[in-house]
Picture 1 (cartoon, rainbow over the protein chains, first blue to last red):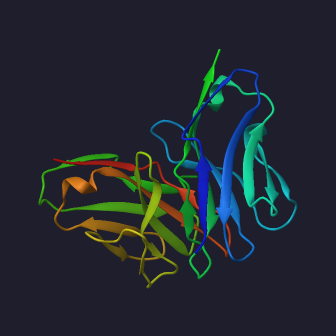
Picture 2 (picture 1 turned 180 degrees about the vertical axis):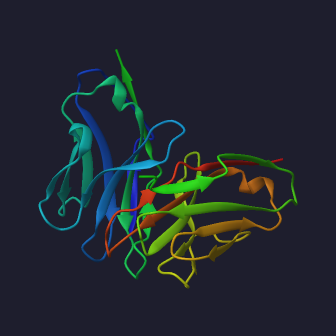
Amino acid sequence: AQSVTQLGSHVSVSEGALVLLRCNYSSSVPPYLFWYVQYPNQGLQLLLKYTSAATLVKGINGFEAEFKKSETSFHLTKPSAHMSDAAEYFCAVMVTGGGNKLTFGTGTQLKVEL
Amino acid sequence: NAGVTQTPKFQVLKTGQSMTLQCAQDMNHNSMYWYRQDPGMGLRLIYYSASEGTTDKGEVPNGYNVSRLNKREFSLRLESAAPSQTSVYFCASSGQYNSPLHFGNGTRLTVT
C-alpha cells in the first residue's frame, strides 16, 4: 500500500530564507505525488503534482518539488519565504486500485518570522 | 465558478443526534470523496464514490453512511453522532484518472 511520511510537524523560517518541507513516500509502483496547502479555515489547494513526467515539478506561488526515486523523496522547496506562505502543507500519494484516492501525510505547519 | 460546495460550514450536535453533510460539485467530475481532518493526523478517507451509482469504504468508515445522489452531489450522514466524530470534514472531487482532487472549504463539526 502507498503511504507518505512528512518529517517535521512544525517548521519555522525567517522571511526571505529557503523553505524546505520534507516528504518521503512508500510505493511498490511508480507513484503519483502531490503537495497541497491549507490556509487557516480553508480547504486544501493544489500546489503541484508529479505524474511521472519531469522529475522537477514547478507549482504555484514559487514552490517546486523534486522527485528522487533513489531517495524515495518528494521534498517541497521555495527559495525565499514570504509571510503569506505561512500555512499547513500536506504531501499526498495517489493510491492505485481505482477512484483517484489520495493518502495524506500528517502535515507540516510552516511559520514565517520577520 | 463555485467548484466544490459544502453545507453547513459549522454544526454542533449532541451525542446521539443525526445529521447529513451536503456536498455538490459543478465540474462534471466522476469521483467524489469525504475526508475528515484531525490535528496531527492529516486527512483520512471516510468514503468515496468513483462514479455515479457506486460508493466504497475508505480508511475510517465506521459510524458514517454516504449517498451519491447524482453526479453532482455526495452526502455524508452521521446516524448517531459520537464525540469521537468531532472533526473537520472535507468533500472533494476529481475528474480523469490520476487527476488531482479539488476540495471544498470544510464543515467544522462538534459533538458534545
